[in-house]
Amino acid sequence: MRKPMLCLAAGALLTLSATAFAGERGKFVGHAVLEVTKFTEYKTMEGHPMKSAMLGEMDGLIFHNGSNSALDRMLERAHYHVVFVGDGGGGGYCMKTFTTKEGHKLFARCDSKATPNGGAGTVTVLGGTGPFTGIKGKGKFNVVFVTDRVCWDDIEWDWETP
Image 1 (cartoon, rainbow, N blue to C red):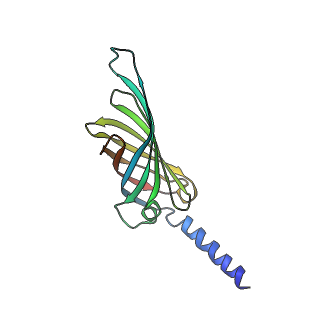
Image 2 (cartoon, helix red, strand yellow):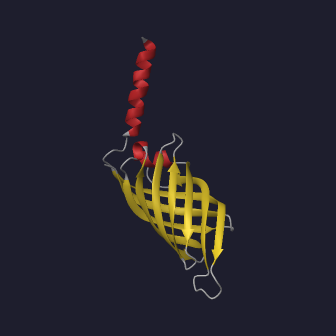
């Protein structure tokens, strides 16, 4: 009799954590460290004003700098993966995926412009899996390269859940 009760209690706790921030709004503020793991550059023909196109991947971790909301706690030390495309003329976009320790994924898109040390622009939260299903948001980010392979990303967005 004890095992079924423990299983029911554990199931209720998992359901509660999956909906812990349903119908809420907030602001996520994070700081991440990323490493470029793949990079390919395609050069244009000589004389073309855009010089090249590039694509790559980055991997790292994100840390929250904001409140102590359920979203902040879930994203603390989440795996952060970025696939990026640059147009060689200073513009680009990326696809960001944050994966929690429990395996839930939060997806975002960024649109960027080059800066002297990296890139900055907007980030749009697109939803995700598990407790991130239906989440939406918009904000900004700023990537600064420390070396040609390592960077940090300050990112923030306002979010809301259904």
